[in-house]
Length: 639
Image 1: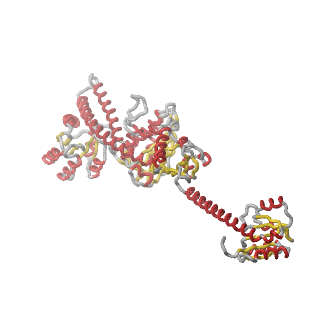
Image 2: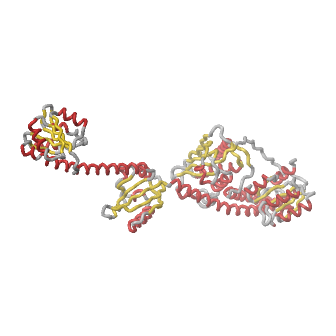
Image 3: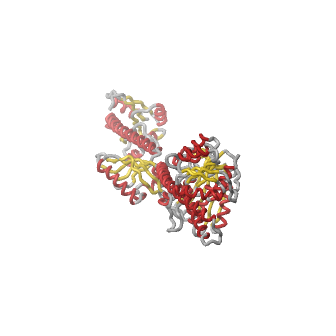
């Protein structure tokens, strides 16, 4: 106990008793005694000062000494010893219950021993205060600790060795989708799949056996509502005061957004690689179709409709058209490019598709919601119509018993976070949403839905190219497409296309006749099977044709005969010297040269660049005689 002066307030109305107490303390110089002869004076004193000890008579002229005790539940500032003239065990118990530190009966012996009572009281009070301060410090520390944990965005947890939660913060409840009282005592296996539980057990068991924490365990949790989130977990071994393992603690972070972005990026890279392969296949296949189409056209020239071969040749042409449609789907997926770009009103385009589709699929009810003053987009209208039709067909197939198809257009502004997985620029976009009430898709199906040749239909019921083609076309237009679906809850496909500041251009209807001419055309292609039919293909149209099997040969031929060559039909993909380099060299010879670019690809990046440098037109293989005749006349008649 400190040797500082101890301040004691003695509350006693009998002067003789007060004097006896004061004399008992005199030999002990460390005590300073102040006397109050009434309850009121004692209260006045205590309002101004805080003594180290109060010794109070139980009965005073104006009240009871126990009124100096703090109210029930209040914090005592000092110990109080109550004195009484009459010993009463029940009164003593009640007095102690009310907060008195001690209860003594007045006597000569008590007065003499009062310094010892005071010292014992102060000593015990000091121990109590130290304990109380330690409890307060611990409570404050716990509150601070809890406040920090509750303010964290990460979920904090503590579990016992069997995986039962013993403590969680609010963020953990949010991540798991359970209330705190539901989580406490819950075993971690209750919100994991069996596969995930094995993975997590293995990692936590390693933490237990080695004592080394883990910091980047990523796994999937199942929330109370059945939805799933990807979690990144850290785990540390929790020990007791004897350094024995008693459980684990750590933090969980919701990385669903990050996982979704990574998945989308991986899917985009995968689709890009598959698109390159599909594009190459389509290009070579279109060259084969071009040769077959050319020979079929040549044979049909000499056949009357009554000829027995006419029906078969027309059937061949129809089959070529079907095969060409298939390669167009492949090229769409392969980001094979756009044919003809025009500022377009998607509202009108979609309404047109709705009318056509609605007439053939009476079991589907179409609902449209179109934003007024929808921004224009620069697109190949035919390809976007193909995308919309593919989405409609997919929805129809998902609703075998009929259902509702919801179409919505909307102006949206996307930021960097929105477009990051798709490697496109943020900005203003037009959004098309196609929602069905069909069977929906599970997670594995959603992962593959845009892959070429993937189909959920039975063998022989579709090619699996519709959605793959839609994906590629939208990607090549600088936009993106995604899908949201759950098994049994339908599907929503969202298409985003960059907005344009250019005004809408009305679409012109193509001419329907085969047009003829007398000019000379230089036909350039590296495929012998196509070159072989070139002369026969051009003759019925009235044109004279020169041929070249490479870019180098084309330059030599054009340089020698440029006075009589009126235009060049140039293949884009050739070995050694491709169409781009050949075109530039032709322009060096004659800046006004007229060139029709042809390719088994559609108008991809290279073709677009050539067109931007002044190329006169583009035609995709395989082309029919009528289509070729119209392209030739459009270019040759241009002033």
